[in-house]
Image (cartoon, rainbow, N blue to C red):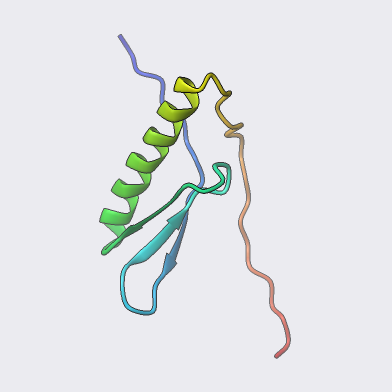
Length: 77
């Protein structure tokens, strides 16, 4: 039996004291942390899984996980 895989956009932000904060734009409040990029990605997978389990438990729909685009803009200082 094949398992369905969904892709979610995550934002990894370097922290001043080290490590990375991870946010999931399509899941409000879904934030985690990892000391390394690899750990941050693992933590993101776990946080997303837990978020989806909670939604299912409360009979709420999963968020739309279509394509999203993240970019930067230059702002004069």
